[in-house]
Image (cartoon, rainbow, N blue to C red; front, side, top):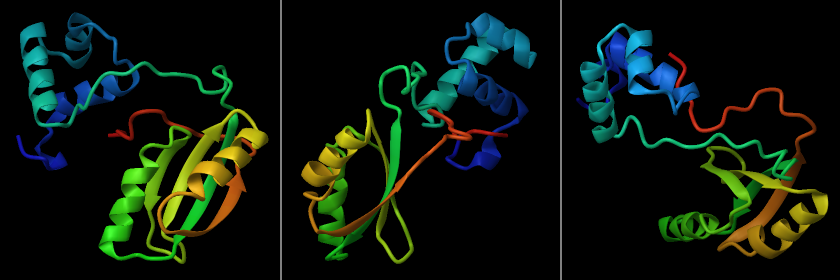
Length: 159
């Protein structure tokens, strides 16, 4: 199986659709839902795992119930955008646990971060002590989320 989504047939797509929302479903129940027997379903799951389409099985966690209700999006502008500087930033941002997402952006700024903390005071500390101290950070702009209208945890798969 190649890395191209076009190689996914209707059974593969059905498996992924179910697993994206119900990662703990039994192979027997999954097979029943997609209309295959258990052995071919398990073989397909194994193939999808080996191909890197399925990257793991995780628990869905509610960040608000974990005391992490504050979400801020941070634009980061770097002072240097040569490859070595980008790599240094990329490596360093991975070590900041409050940064849930980090995307390099083609815009007037270089990166967009999604930062989750308990409250605004925690966020200010993370911004001052960790984000602003990342390699080559020249400036930041913060946008505080007031409400999450839609938030998907763990999977962008929507066939």
